[in-house]
Image 1 (cartoon, rainbow, N blue to C red):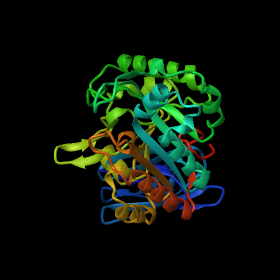
Image 2: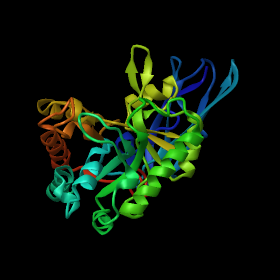
Image 3: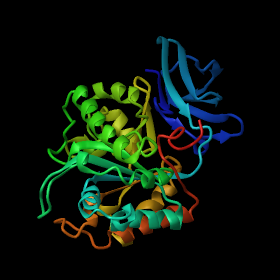
Length: 363
């Protein structure tokens, strides 16, 4: 049977995947039946021993690659579509999940400045030191736990709005979920519930932090939503969803219910386009709260050396581990962020927001 094995349908290609100079020239590879010629986008392919390859020139943002076999086994056709990240450059996005504690802290303490809160001051320090940008994914509700009171986002004051807006070029707030619990709140939820709760959080962000600070979500709590929610999220302005496609004993997880083949591909590549919805799925490269200081460089080094992972670093952590009252508090969590951001900065990666351009690169 005729099949294109590379590139994968939905692959996002960049300068690492071919020769780029005004166009991107790649070599398409695949499997084919014997006893008949194969063409790829009209160009005769080199075929032998059940495999074929052919040069293809990519000149558009999206390109269909069509292989055709005509021989003893009849006419067969296989096509894939790919995306060319034409203006790609080495870049990183830093996302922080599960945020609610710092909002409660600012609201209850009534600080003169947002940055009297140690957490926000830490992020500002990293911005000043490295130019880092942060996507801060927030909840509407913080439940009472660990001796701390409950908190609702509607109780956050709007008197810091000017300060939020002044930092919007490097500090963005995005919906994560209505609350931390239950776990996996949208894994089986109807799209209407997800969009309704997204609207609730975004209304509050606009109220207290201004529209400049509000950015589209890129991580939905637990990285699981029904595929029927893809298009509603795209229509709401979402362009990228970050997760893992993590291989587990029971299958792939934290993968937004992508099928097995796409989950496997995403686990081994920076990103993947879903053409039906327009969403791009990005693979998280490191979770700082799970990565000890001495493992940060060994975690990132093989990714930077892999052409399929090198271009985009999707960096990630969770807020709760910064707080000493939290049961699993990590005292050196700030140092882990510093080490991670310093590592990518020293290797030429630039900070971006995924909602700007194509995953932070010009379109």
